[in-house]
Length: 345
Image (cartoon, rainbow, N blue to C red; front, side):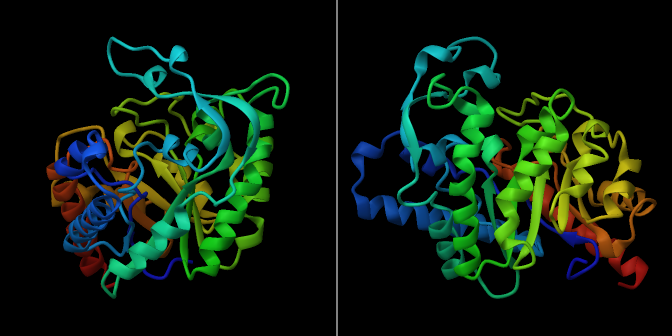
């Protein structure tokens, strides 16, 4: 059971400051020391916004990741960018995200970078909030790779090749002292309606097996958020009952953007694990009021006890402007505090 009732948490990502986005497009003008300083400043800014909002759990805002998946590809050997496979113009959508061709056996000689991110967060964060690390699971991580047809015949082959790298990174995070880890597997939730969900569960559980019981482990299940656009079939019921066997302490489910459709299903997840409910819509620039948050939490409490309920944005906030992200988080935390005061928690 979670450490505190109606816990306030985040998925991982946070919007870049404008200057960091500009600098990342002009890196040739900066030296290594300049880049290190920019990264630290960006993480400090993300920490500041989250702490000011009053979150129980914070992240580094994933300020070193230029893309949810593709930033990790820089740590992998055996890939080369494939620009011919992406649509170049028209409305933004997932087929414009970068792709990579596999050209040799995949290796990760220096890990995936999440440990260094966590150590930086630990050094820069104030005492108080729980520090969370997030890393994509192997199925999601394989999503922008094109199998070569020989070494890896399909996405599942790529997933199996990536699984040991993710597992090792998770073990190293725990060894570094990380007590809260999210393994993001939105591809599993996006495609649960058409894929073998038992196979998904097996992949996930083998990935996390070495760290189960050694940290607070969660998974994030959503339906896509590239440029604020979903990509999957936005229903929870295809995941059940199999996803109840995921080896996690907490599952995060996207609700606000789906107008709390299937909210009653959090009760089923709650039989096996704590549930972080997405009550803040990261795709909408309507800023939820404190009253909105209070009402939404009370709606969730019809299906889950406060001891098993956490609240969060639907997804990471990287695709939401910083001014909106800051206010949304502040109102979420204020609403959670109000409900806890009402209930005497």
